[in-house]
Image (cartoon, rainbow over all chains, first blue to last red; front, side, top):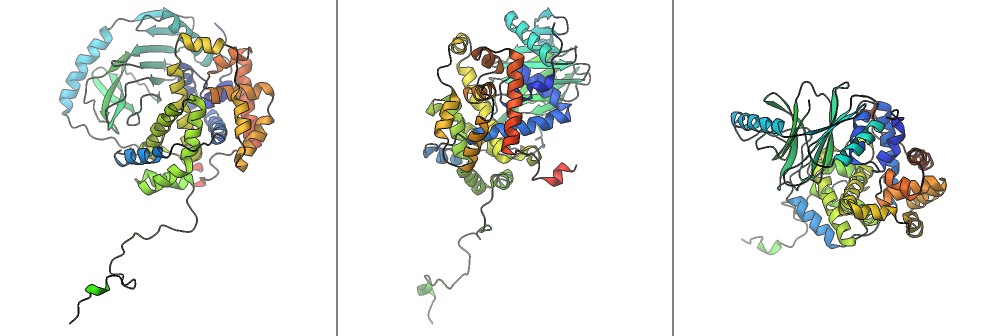
Length: 244
Length: 218
C-alpha cells in the first residue's frame, strides 16, 4: 500500500467540502490532534466563505416569513448542557443490554488490508475496499479501522477508529429527519454502560463527531433523544457498530 | 370633576411605554454580534441576521444545487439550523458569516451528492465540462467591493488552481471528481486546492480570531 501522504495537503480539499465522508472523517480526526492544522483549516475555511459571499442573490420574499415562523417554534440548543432523560435509568440500561447483544451478534464481513482493516456489514465489498484505500492514504497511523452499517430507517453510520491514538471519528450521513425537537445522540458503550459521545444538532441528519477518548468502549450506538441530549439512552438505538 | 378620558391622545403622557426602548440605535450590529444575540434567544436579532445573510445563503445554495426550489429548501434548513445551533458559534474560529456559509455549503453539497449518487453522477463527472462555474461568477460578480476583490484574487491564481477550487466549491465535486474532470493527477489537485486557497487567503487578507483576543489568549 502507498505511504501515508502528507496529510496537510488535504486541508484545501477539506475546506472546500471536496472530500468524501470517510476522508473527511479521517481528516477531522487529524485536526483534532494537530493545532497547526486546525488553524490552517480555520483560515482556509474563512477564505472559502469569501467565495460564498460572492454569490449573493435575493431569495424569494416568502422565505423570510417561512424562516421566521419556523424559528418562533424551534427550540435552541444550549451550549453543552444535556437534558435529563425522563425515563428511569434502569429501563434504559435493560433495553440497552438487550440491544448491545443483538448488535454484536450481527454478522460482519471482514476484509483484510495491509495497514487497514475494514469491516462492513453489507454487500458493498468494493465500496469498502475503496474506502479502505482512501483512509490508508489519508491517515498516518497504521492501525486504522473502519466500520460502517446501514441505519434503521435510512442512512449510514461509519466509524473510524485508531486504537493507537485512542480516538475515533463517527460520520453519519443521510439519516432520516428526526422528529421535531429531537436529535441524534451517540453513545460509547463499555459492557452494558453507555456514555454519551456527543449530541447532534436538533434536526440534523448528517454530521461528523470526533471521539476524543475511546477508553475501552466496545460498541458505538446511536439513539434519537430530546434536543440537547439525554444522560442515558431513552430509546432503542437505531444503529450500532462494534468497535473492537 | 372631569375625567381624563378625553386626553388619551395627548402625546405628552407617558404612563407606560408602549414600545420597547430602541436598542442602541446608533450603528447596526454586525453578523458576529447579531449571532451572539441570537444565541441568547433574541428573535429580533435573528431577523436582522436573516436580512444580512439570507441573500448569501440563498445565493450560495442556488449556485451549488442550481434548482431554485431546492436552493430555497436548503436556505431554509440552514437558516433554521443557525437559529438552533447559534450557541455553538465560536468567534475564535472564524466569523459569523463564514460559520453560516460553511453550514450552507455543506448542506448544499450533501444535497447535490445525494441527488446524484450512483451511476448518474459517474456519468456526469465523466462528461466533458460544459459549464465552468467560474465564468458565471465572473459575469455575475459586479456589485460590492468585497465581491470585486474576490474576483480579482481569483484571477491571480493559476488556471489549474482556480478551476480546481471553483469546480469543488461551486460545482460540489469531490477532489477525486475534480481530478477526473481536469484530467490531472490526484496529488496535484489536492496540492493545487491548498496552494490556491493559501494564495487567495493572502490576497484577501483573511485573518482568523483577530476580533476575539479574549479567547485567543487562552
